[in-house]
Image (cartoon, rainbow, N blue to C red; front, side, top):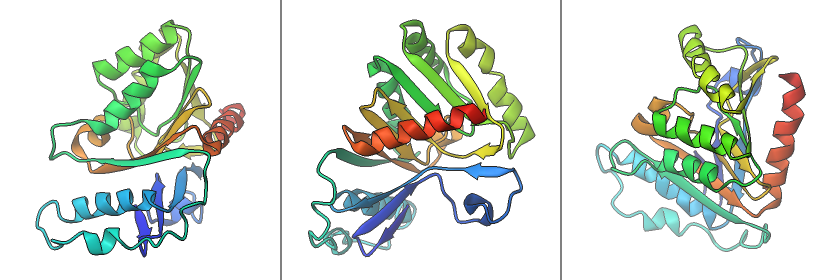
Length: 232
């Protein structure tokens, strides 16, 4: 999360390191996804950040001075959509990160395209992926061909057979490392965020994302996936 003056916010896969911006190339070309938000949606990113900042020891008691920073300037930037930023943390009982992914899979009618650097998933996620594919949904997952961890890469590949036999299509991005954490479904909804499809992200980490619904950027994200597939 990056929030600037409460008016502009960014979230997605990017960390602050040279390889994330392809200044250096330790794992080939680094492919990532991020989103810029303006307007009221930024308040959710601010609240998410403050929740993480104050998770162990509260240093901010009054969030309103940060949440009231928007002045309405950006209220009409985009009118064709709904945007819902959200966050997840290991201190609560809800598994928001996984639930958002599962809901997309369960509601898909035509397709679900997924980008994830790691694929180390529980039975519930395996069931959702395979059930969607068996019902005729075009489920495609893009993972890296070049990984930043040999052991994790082999663990990711260990899930391929079960998924492929159920009809899930899996692609490995050959130019380098896919670090994007992204879902796109039915030209209707998409997620851009920080949560990988692995146990750490879904159950043990502080994570965040933005759910887009009925919005032109969903089509842009779909087109990005389709443009990536020939390089896999």
